[in-house]
Amino acid sequence: MRVTRRYWAVAAIVAVMVAWAIVLEQAILLVGAVSIAAWLLVRQYRFVRSVDGTVGRITIDLELDRSRVVAEETSLGTLHVTSERPAGLSVRVAVSPPTGATGETIACVLGPDENLTQASFEVNWPIAGRFQFDQPTVTVRDSLGLFRQSTTVGSTPSVTVEPRTPHDIHVGEGGTRLTAGFGEHEGGRTGSGLTPAEVRRYTPGDTFRRIDWKATARLDEPHIREFEAEQDYKTLLVVDHRATMGAGQGGRRKLDFARQVALALVKSTRELGDPLACYTVGDEGVTNAFSASSDDDQYRAVARTLRTLEPTTADESGNGMGSQSGTQVLNPGEARRTAQLLSGETDFERRLRPFFADAEQYVQRIVDEPLFGAVRVASTTQDSGARTIIISDDEHRTELLETVKAARGGDGHVVAFITPSVLYDSRTLTEIDDAYRRYTEFEAFRRDLAGVSRVNAYEVGPADRLTTVLAAGKATRRANQ
Image (cartoon, rainbow, N blue to C red; front, side, top):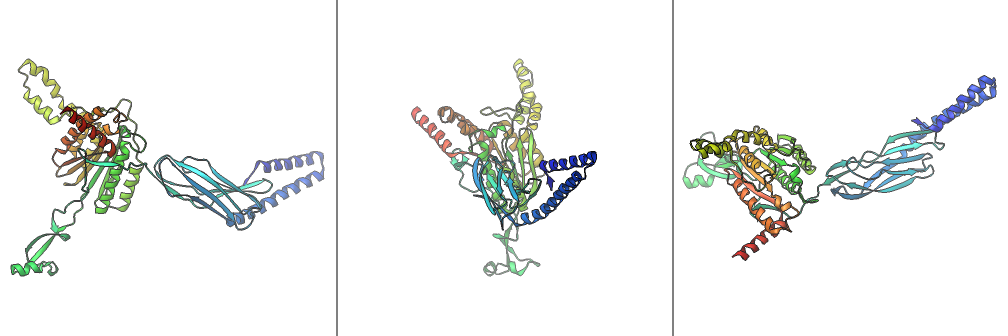
């Protein structure tokens, strides 16, 4: 319980009366001061008792029109306050929108003679995530405004805010949509399972339940049917959300398309029961890291993180490699071999050799790049034969190529999902011929990636824009024939 300024004003009057009673030696003033003080104590006692009963009779419900919304949408709600009978005291109920949401504080007042009140409100949800309202704050005041007491009572609804997602996602190669699902894998060894693998001769110790009676009858001696054993593959998912992944407009940015692919892959991995590790990479390095686990909480945590992922802000000095869209990719191994071939015997070779001799410095620059560094560190925990899924764009082509090569360690398999910058450029539909040229350059880069052993590379982007660019390219080729 707290006392108000009005209470302290009355208390000050009592103090003044006591002082004057002593100075003037007037007993009547002292009696008056004692009477007022006693009156304050009685009201305080009654207020404390009344508050417990009042709060106990109040029911507070915070109702929302929906529990799931899309980022930047506005939801409606109503704050209901009811009491079994008139409260006898003034009751104010207030609740603020959760952190991350925008809107006015919701408040309504239940008068001393009322038993029902409500207030409607609007809340805007600018960012994705899961948000929960705090319990409403109930503030009770006495009729003279001398005392007040606050407590929290009522429901705490939550709202899940989904990121704005594109609905025309294209995932494929060279404009051809990928039709087969990704994520399935074979067992690779025999044992107990569901898929028949081979028939072999019975050996002592084999269980009779595994005898293949048809094969036994056909071959005239006992044979065992082997099945492909179920095998879990550890999956490493690396999602790039550097500043360049923010290209595009509301709900159709690179990251919005990449996010949907990543969420689909998490779902597929969960259905397979494969252990999942996940790293998200920003301009300064790793922003989130999940070690490999096949626990349901792991899948949910990764999906929750992906839904709230936003592009980071690039360092003012820029990335070490910078934007390399449309540039020729340099291979460090080729640079070393070329440097060795240039013996330096001729003036031309002596002039040219230094340009290839700095391969080691080049490799060091690659190592310092965020995506390459994250994959190299994460790959140290991967099992032989594990798969690495990299989701990025084509703005850092050299880094992406070297990252893919590094991620293959051992017998590992790599799948790269790449968002072509040309499909997210606002000028794409106005400069269509240039857009087609840029797309063909991207396609050549994607094929280079897919040409690396144990690597698959796919494009991810808006289907409508890709269709427009390819149609323009076909029209140009016909016109030139």
